[in-house]
Length: 181
Image (tube, rainbow, N blue to C red):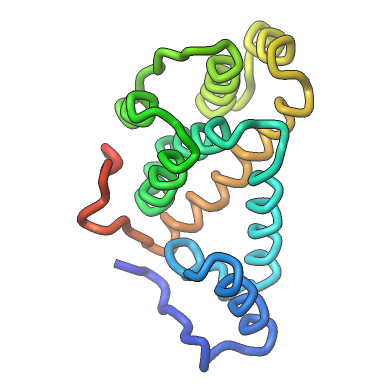
């Protein structure tokens, strides 16, 4: 149940309404963490810009979604997990990788780049820093631009996950792969 009262379009001030209208024009939906973002339209807009960047960055879309799922798993953020499962499937991330992340185990990867992204993201989330070995291995495989985007994705999805948890955004009861908490 939401911990923060939703704001209807009619209750919004001009800045909230402007960002809301932009979100509706581009995504067609306002839900989950947006329950909180509507109270801070500047933060909402900045969050959307990072989402736009991650849609076309140095990582592949399956890699972005894998990092998103790992971060949602880290924060036990049910609504972002639910949303990212659908986006991950649409991006082509294999179900066995989604299930492995949900179960807290390392997936089996078909390529070194995906494994490097996973390993550096996992260490960064769990230890607040990738080890020198993981950093060097990942940098050698995916390069510095992708490494920076891994950290950007973690930071973005930490903010989204925390907002969702803070406002009490829950996944629907019929989520296809519910987050194991």
